[in-house]
View 1 (tube, rainbow, N blue to C red):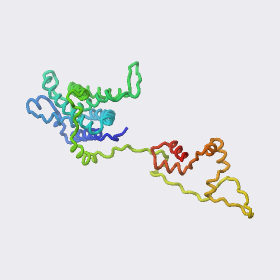
View 2: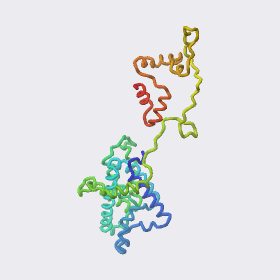
View 3: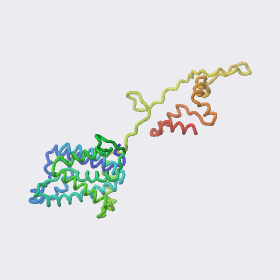
View 4: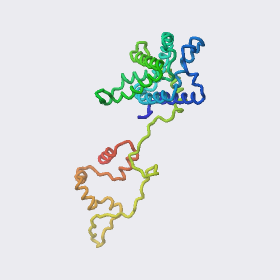
Length: 317
């Protein structure tokens, strides 16, 4: 799995990781912390409601968040598309911020005085979409407990939800509730899209900063150690063949086989191999046997196509 066609997810991972590392390096992490008392009730620092989404509080939460975003966010963005996924992320952050403020105002007297740092609410909102949209690939059991390939992501999310109680659990519940509100479309959140000028600005100026999104293509050719490109081997002009000796011409001179003719004429060994493999019958039926040079040339032009498909196409040419 790669970041191909998932520019928003890659930006979220890179941005949250960069801000978390920089906040720890320059010792400004206290600016990202939020408490109802005294930040909201006494000092009225409402900007902390938005800033606390930018950085995680510690390296363990950062690691869990990055892993979940990579495993879950990539698949959801490919389902939604980048524009819809970015709109969904913006809506989720705004709704979760409002719900966090309401939760702090209602439950700060019973011990809920802070919220977990980082885009945790967005991660749990994405995780809810993942649970509703993406089906499991396979199922298995451990000690009779039914599990699937999605269970590991849920275990990581559970660990993230109980890391700093009660604030982390409250953020997890708010994120799931936000995802459910978006999924049910009770308030028409699904129809919202980021304005086109924002999309154009992001495509022209922000997307180049993210880097390449195309997955690396693997070559199906085995290269020697230290070699980076496939070099065409030197062709020996002297052709060694076991072809039958041609008959003498009427003038008494024997026809000398040129290298081109020797390469095209079947040899005794080639006829024997064709008899065993049935290649001769295919040649008689109108199916040509492509040479290794042709196969190598086409395979180098189309590295993603299987070798058997290339041979079949050359045989029908």
